[in-house]
Image (cartoon, rainbow, N blue to C red):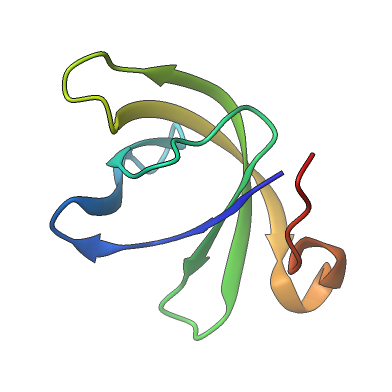
Length: 87
């Protein structure tokens, strides 16, 4: 499992395609897989945790993906989702 954070840099970015349906897209390497987590800084000051449930990898460019995530909660409620494992 990998943990990704919201990014805004060129070539290293994850963004919302549709907030209500929890769809994201991005350009990062390595690309996320189903089960990986996304940490997102919210306007409230808390960090939300989302789990990738679907990921579609693009061939060109090779770092692009589209994904769907589900709400898990907040980092302060789920400390087990703050460390990365290699599985």
